[in-house]
Length: 291
Image 1 (cartoon, rainbow, N blue to C red):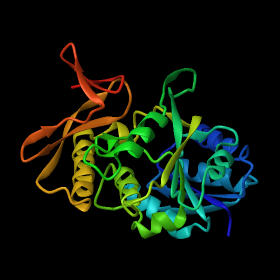
Image 2: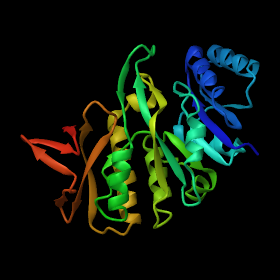
Image 3: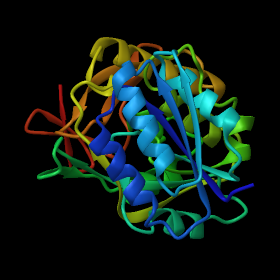
């Protein structure tokens, strides 16, 4: 058994981006395996990717399937993995040096997941579009956990960027395959709901580099993604015992891929203490909601 499995779905990702991912994994001071599931990749590209991966000196598990579903692809990769921990890294993204070592060091007996701050770059890597900082949201989660004001019931973070304890993922049922999008948010919420205690941490520094890829699932079928996001939050509300409540899409947080939801109880909107109006504009902490 290796220490950590890198779970990587791959669908028509350019070879140069995959090379960046592999290069970044070689800069991680941990015992890892790369589990790649090529999902409906075009034949010529698939051949090129496969030849490259098998030529590299890296612990590799590789398979080819036709799922056309991020949840199904990740679940298949999980079944083929052997790590005690998982990190879900898309084939067009990569990790900063020693990101995995930093994340693993943060675990204790109560921790089921450690989240990375994320840096988004443009397609060729020449420009940083934004950087996210998770600590302020984790502080809100700690303050309002198990209440209807939990920040994770308000925001869809679009991506599980970090490290997850294998047992926690499996006990939560892995990814729910009925979702086209937000299957990652759903998994995070289920893991959080598995205990009354605080089981999530964040480490500072943009350890995950997220590439702008206009052809990716997260950039297409926006209405479907938003609908699935609302379903995951409504499922969490039900699981947590909040009756007669419903989450509705409100808007997007500034330029980030964070989607914000209002929650209604008996048709009355519940406004969390960290949300406020300023000059008729809606804010969560210091971030404006673009409605």
